Length: 101
Length: 251
Image (cartoon, rainbow over all chains, first blue to last red; front, top):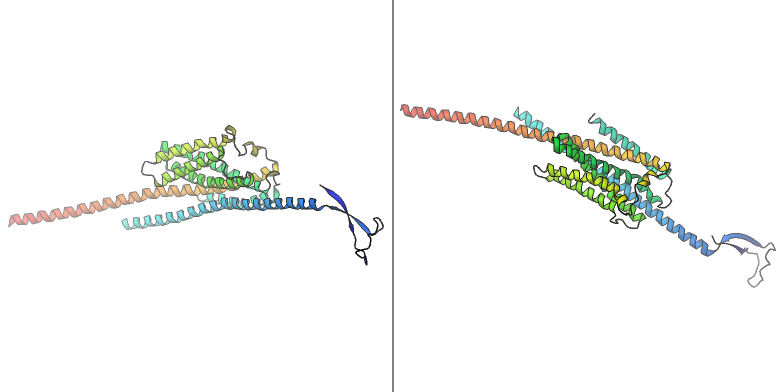
């Protein structure tokens, strides 16, 4: 990390644009620990890449899990319809048996 | 028992599934290199195992059916082949989704991918031959199923024999305990669902075979009854003709 110490000037009431800045350490300045703009932008870019990857990973997972359970459900429905057809066939056979008797 | 066991398996699978999702997404640590997408593993690998297991079951059942003409073995082979198609399609779709996220390419023509695709095609051919094949095509179908079962060890050893992009078989053995603890419930849920569906399909196929036999028998009975009635009518007609002839002679 490229951390740098930046001294930010605290606004002083009544200070004009042409007035000279007060000397450091005189009590008008506050020392702030921060990062330079480049480091912050680099970090944000990395975070954006990570966020994109996580979003893409989640979409891949949703597709994968959705496909698996959709396949099982589709096969379950296929079996259920088949059992309905078999039940109809059995009752047709029973009707024919009754007629023959 | 025949009807209860599939229901018990479905209930177990349905009950375990929410626990699996909870474990996969909230209790299992993220894999360092692949990140979130590695979570496809917990369903992709068990599905591949189920596909290979059912491929072997189908091959053995088809061989038994070929030798003993057993209707139960025939039903088992057909049911197992259909589960191979369902699980195989799951593997062949989730694998490329995972590959697209990690390798940047969905299909790399890697030996494991190709041998898995081949297994799926063999069992698709088996199911089609069983469905639409003419009488006597059971032998061809059984040969296909046995050929498919032989492909299973090829899939397993593909990553050892050839250079592949697919991870090798040691990945599962070297999993950390938290990942193992997630993989097992996922395998149990999917296996319970697959077995439940397979048992239901076996029952249906056995019922269908018995129904076909029932229809053939009842048609035979109806035909023989019709033939008897026709015979009686013919006898009556013959009798009438004889009477007529006799009366003509008397005249």
